[in-house]
Amino acid sequence: EEAVLEDELRMRIRELSDRLQREHEAGAKERRHRNHRLKMLMREKDTFMKKYIEERRNLKREKEISLAKIEAVSTKVSEKEDAERMVSEMDESLTKAWAAVEGRQKMLQKMRKEHQSL
Image (tube, rainbow, N blue to C red; front, side, top):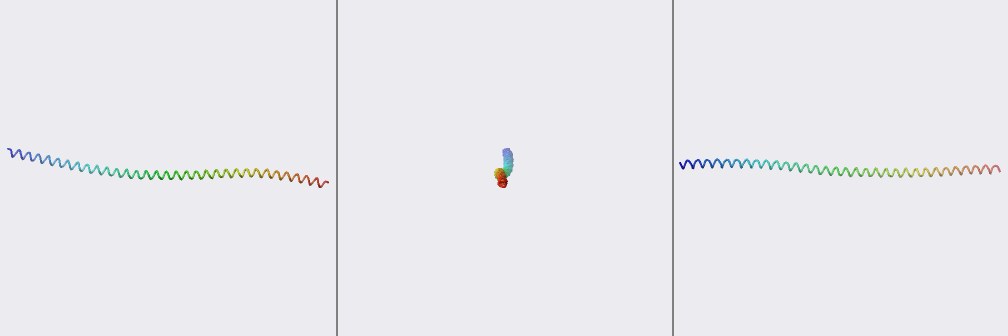
């Protein structure tokens, strides 16, 4: 009877031991899968972050280029306005000078007529 109990006890211990071993292996397998998934997610996150950082750099560079272009256009517009103002002032000055020349010519013609009549 004791031998039978010992055999049953050994069988029960072996079953529990086998079950524990299987559960341990299943847990290890699950941990490996979970770790693999975590590694893949970390790689995906790193790739995304690199792309994000690169995209931000590109946008910043494009913004700087756009601002430089705007500044250049603004400078050209300002230079053009200055040139137009100068041309306008010169035109006005020439118009006044021409009017003065015409006035002198009329006066000279008048003086010539007076001189010829004498």
